[in-house]
Image (cartoon, rainbow, N blue to C red; front, side, top):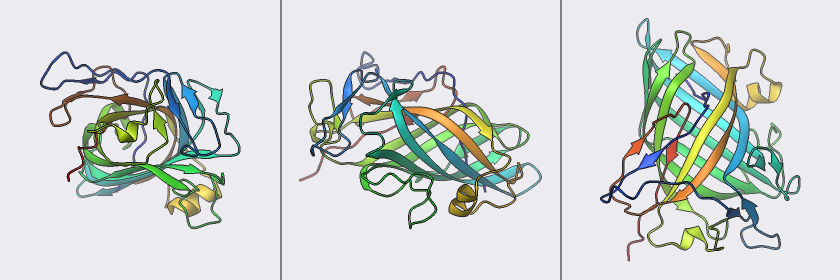
Length: 271
């Protein structure tokens, strides 16, 4: 079984609905309110949120080259827009936790199973990298502010089982907490009806970690850490956000995408 974090140089995602003019563009000058309309001011994000963290990938081989994989990954954001520190650091922490499964072939293709989960948290007690509590690496504690469900994904891996090339993953936004994500007019994105938004997630400079820390080993249950059977990967990347029309019809295209792209929407609430 295997887990995945990959390297991404560019992220170009287009979305088409019934009207082909509805091309996706990521939000600029939007806001993140880390305490959800509490006592802290919302902070402006020019384009993207920077993230970093470890991922653990496990492969189980069904024959010489074909395998199933499991992935578990943890992320933290200490900055936005390429290194601008958050005003709330170190008082608060923005983290993410991802799990997913799929199948692949060495030096060939891989595909994700439906049902993987990406969760995003706001935490008033920063503890990312910790192995001293009930969370996973301090990534999935605090207040959960968004949840995405994996719908589909595909890409390639090299002969060592390390992800490479173009990988595109589509997720559906299952839940989005009120008061955290605001557009440039300071309108709460969770209150848009229907809620339809895209989280673009790409990882850059992914690399195999030969000697993971004790915290990584204990929190993720790392085994031998020997590709292609299992491996720890260090990743850096970004989240981008967009709101789009037409929730029922869309096509995600990965033109120029090297890394992971996450597309999500939340359907209209039913009475």
